[in-house]
Length: 167
Image 1: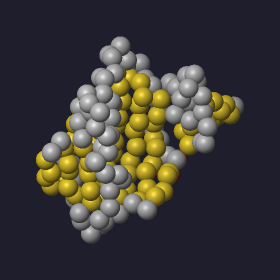
Image 2: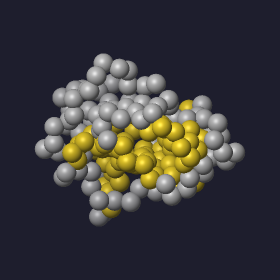
Image 3: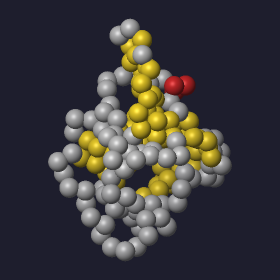
Image 4: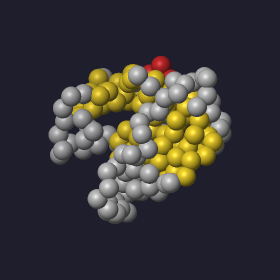
């Protein structure tokens, strides 16, 4: 059985059920509806090659999970491969809580007004609305995992000021 629905992130969610196995893929699209219900995540393992990829001049991002769980909403779980000297984007901030885990490579963290070295196995936690970023300063790709979400039943923290969300 193949079923396609739209999530509120303007993505196609494709559910392929074969026997007792289920694969969920979230693929970017150009449109979407603000009233669509987000995909509810199910337990599964998503292999690297099955995760939809978005390529850019800085490298690529593989999207593993987007949607909601029993305790979270606005979930994003992805892996980025960042080329030497590049960053996914400038330091930024948002309403969601976020973890970043360095899988391979070296770089520089930015957290608030501070910068410091980033190394394999470092884990960053960032509160809502705190500026943060990561730049590959090595000569090999920097690979990191990102987990971003809002908690259900917890009010989304309001924007603390009128500053821009990217520096």
